[in-house]
Length: 321
Image (cartoon, rainbow, N blue to C red; front, side, top):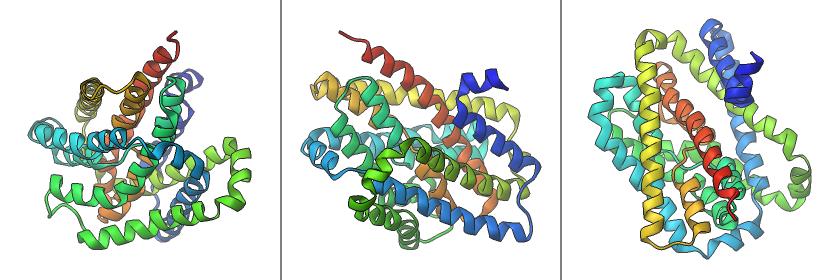
């Protein structure tokens, strides 16, 4: 087990254990209600802490570079959905309906926050702009992702009306985030001192949501819907999608003639998708439990691939003279 953890990382290793646990011992009966309540509390805590971590100084420092922000938002909310629609028929043929919908859902998600900023920092890119864009992308996704989900998947796929979905996501994600940022003057220094173990709280919240979602999916017969061959094809599809995103964001940065630092921020913010936001959003947008598990598989696979690839790219750029 130790060699596996070194290869894929602790977070992904624990997530694999969580998926295995949910497959063998899914939450059933009265425990479903307990885990649902606990999951909602964990999500609220997760976004409350995100709000408390975000420095207003970083927002002000990075807010002025509007051309870079527009490019990043265009890659996140325009380029990815268009790629999803372009590959939709192929994904359905190769992966089946459930995983194909998961790929479309992946394309509709906002960018990551922590890893995008961390990789931009390692690569010595425009860190203030990355902080501003990644955080704004996460907030915009609360309103944009439900619209993109209905557009790319079709109106019949979402279980909730659009306005109802936006309202519920805002209450579960945006409100705790804003409350956390409001209390930053009092909590900011404490949060900055305890980032190491608070990271474990963040990851634990995500893993709890994954367990709850996969439990419902397993009880609903998810593993009868997804074969081993489809899982291998899913990994290949995620690799191709990430490769295209990296190439297109790189070309866009050169066409606009951004500096190298700005191109680095564009790459790491515009080619990544958020697992932390995607998991709780799926809980709201797709109330049918059997559908949530297959929807999350592409997000989880893409998340791990993007971490490994971006880590290599960041270290390469970070070593430049």
